[in-house]
Image 1 (cartoon, rainbow, N blue to C red):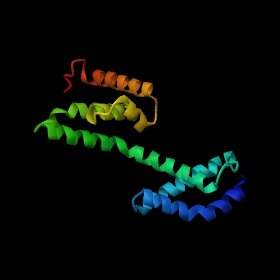
Image 2 (image 1 turned 60 degrees about the vertical axis):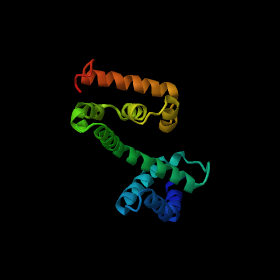
Image 3 (image 1 turned 90 degrees about the vertical axis):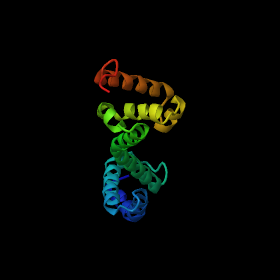
Image 4 (image 1 turned 45 degrees about the vertical axis):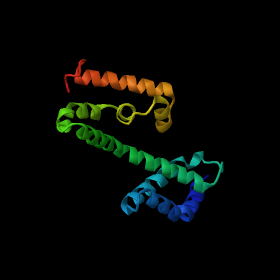
Length: 163
């Protein structure tokens, strides 16, 4: 696809794309517009790889959805830590203070390790379930859990005295 054809197709698909992103962003127009612009830039930069393998709309929507997920993932670590704090605070009156070192250590972990640990220990998911949620193999989840534990052990001390 050449740049002129891309421009013609984008003019036709721009509003439906914005409406999709507006729905995904729960009505946040500024965010939806930002993600739409980012989507179109990504599509423009990779339009040379598009060879009428399917509908242009489906192709741009896939890029838009991945762009949305990337944005959401960038917000996720804070959400996980907030959830962890809420659960821990409910379990003991001084829970938030008692586990502050754990929260700080969790915040330093790579997102995939932190997510695997939180799903396993806080939510009680099995490795198989986590692999489905995180879209990776069970061995990858086990490795992320192992690495996450090692990183926490290093940050908190072998016996957990950081707690």
